[in-house]
Amino acid sequence: MKRTLINNLVENEETKVSGWAKKVRDTKYMIFVVLEDRTGSIQVSIDKENNKDIVKDMEGILPDSVLEFEGKMVLSEYVKQGGKEFLPTKVNRLSKAEALPLEDNANIDTRLDYRWLDLRSKKNNIMMKVQSEFVKGMREFLYNNDFTEIHTPKLIGTASESGSEVFEVDYFDRKAYLAQSPQFYKQMAIASGLERVFEVAPAFRAENSNTYRHATEFTSFDLEFAYPDSIEDIMSLEEDLLIAGLTSVKEKYENEINELFNTEVIIPTKPFPRIKLEDLYKELHERYGYEIPTEDIGDMNNETEKLTTKFALEVYGSEFIFVTNYSKAKRPFYHMRDNDTPIGYDLIWRGTEITTGAVREHRYDILKKQAEEKGLKKDVEFYLEFFKYGCPPHGGFALGVDRLTMLLLCIPSLKEEMFVFRGPNRLNP
Image (cartoon, rainbow, N blue to C red; front, side, top):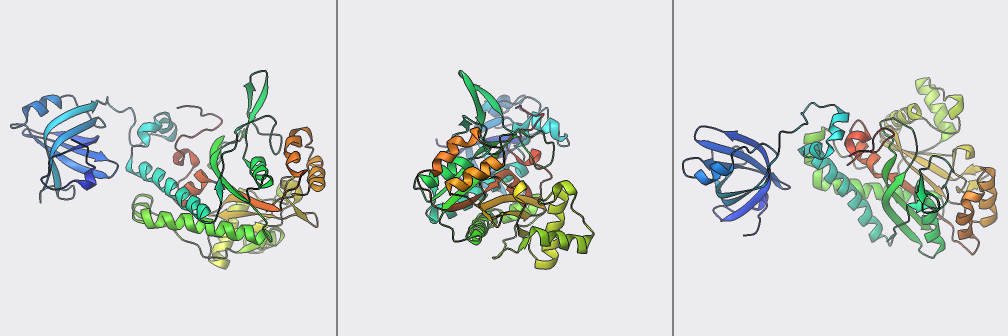
């Protein structure tokens, strides 16, 4: 007899259901079990007088045991579980649970110690499914727009990009590093003739940061494409990508998000507002009396990002805003420059930066000079080789999948949102 999912049960049809025993209630004449699978839940009603073998097999069964029942579903006006109940003729104890070590009000560190138990909650289950749907919507948009998905190495021979904040690992007789991003390899793909590429994969940052939005390992959604006419092409593509992902989530999980997270999925409209960094500083000063700290001039910080969202909502009615014209001192060496200003942007959403995007410098001589200007030479020799033999102009950006999900569902921190969090003080489970 094949398993039937709970939401697919047909009245009076002999079948088998399997799932978690989320609740077990033993009364004088009956045992009631709330059985749950990925599609929903149902009350299993066991009449003690007529099911003595089942009653014996149910001895010592605690919530979160995994059970399999054979029997049939019937309709009942007395049952709260959607007016349906399952009447079993047989039970199979697939996995007997011990008393759970995790209470409902446990603090975040205890919850992370038992993350697999924490994820069993309906809210956390939906959270993971929402993230999956978000990525699916964006991925399908790119497939439909002639992008090729690639898979780049995460073990690399030199410290990438900035030369700092990398994890060093032993690699046989030499040192290797965990990749901070697939940036160099995305550009290698462009140089190889793949004009439009993307990747969804882990990235690693050796940042000793204990903030709500930082992790040492996270999932990055990266893309790169050739022949953009300007930075506007890159921003426009990102607008379309986010609209596709959010629309997919809204269509499938709008009700669950409203119910469990007390928030709504807002689909933005194009174009998102744009503002130059210098003009933003002036607006934040005039409206909110904010002065950017000296060490952050040419860039943004947490407070700037929060005020930028406030400004965007008040002036443009938008949760999203592009900020352009950052200082070259605050941007990577591979960003193309116009009059010594990087041709790039950050995208701010709900008070947090979610993207750095740019037109890349594809001309070998200029790229080499900009790398040397940043004090990078040996570490980027292999990367510079990509541009010696012809490379199309190109640009792209990256999105943190976990950060996107955190902001979408208004979750306080990445610790609560990520499937398994990695930070400076967290390496288990």
